[in-house]
Amino acid sequence: MLNIAITTGEPAGIGPDITVAALLHLARQASPRYADVQWHVIGDAALLQARADAIGQGDFWRVASTALTIVERPLGAPVRAGVLDAANGPYVLDLLDAAIDGCQVGTADGVRYDAMVTAPVQKSTINDAGVPFTGHTEYLAERSRTPRVVMMLAGPQPAHDNAMLRVALATTHLPLREVPDAITPAVLDETLDIVQRDLRTRFGLTAPRILVTGLNPHAGESGHLGREELEVIEPAIARARARGIDARGPYPADTLFQPRLLADADCVLAMYHDQGLAPLKYGTFGHGVNITLGLPFVRTSVDHGTALDLAGTGRAEFGSMIEAIDTAIAMARHTVRS
Image (cartoon, rainbow, N blue to C red):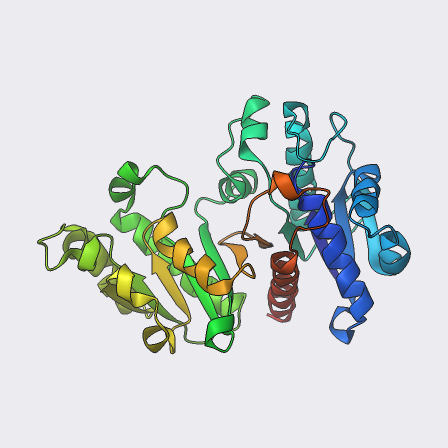
């Protein structure tokens, strides 16, 4: 039996909606690949029922109940769809803490989660509650005492026969002016090691090939447009290859994301957030998955935000949540086998 935890995210956003819709969709499929999966939905049960009713999925509990456990966490304040309230900032973090503890040490009922899937959170709500919060990735690393993690997004590309695209990031949520200083030899060494290890142990890729972008336009153009490629990125790639990692580059980011170059690649390592994620999100058309590499447990998430204007309307797309769930299951199965 696989135990998959799902945190329902910002209560005023679409997290509860897409959790309900995705699990109901999977229950109606009755696919044998979910036969051994137990869902542990972490959140306020009354909120989930209210949102299920609001989006026309009031039979959620009846259809999905046989494989569904609600891990009750009470809201900090009543919720109106689309309206943020800082009083629910601690509630959102409580959901994450429950999932992290369940993955690392197990629950009070003796259940150990094999993976966690997270619905989107609103960073401003948590910060407004007085808790400094940069994002899921950083919080999970700090809470699990993991010295370095790597953000990866992945997804099928409908325009290219659903070929899988994976993009990892050397830096994550930083102002653009801070990025060059953050790309150090140690960061690149550790990032490439984590990407290599998790592609093998979580995805089952025996000899992953990693394509590395440059930082500057034209990958620095031999030092005429910046020296980071010559002084930091190229030496890091050489060191990685000496450690047995099939890393190649640096490639100009504006020409790397094309099928011809990506056909034999297992992952792209981009230098900063928008450099890698803009082409990925365009190419995967709302079916991308956010994956945190380097953690002692499997964590996936949707590739979008809280979409406050869609909460409770029934118009929120849940394709990314389906992909996040499927990816978590696949990674958990491989990890268990390993």
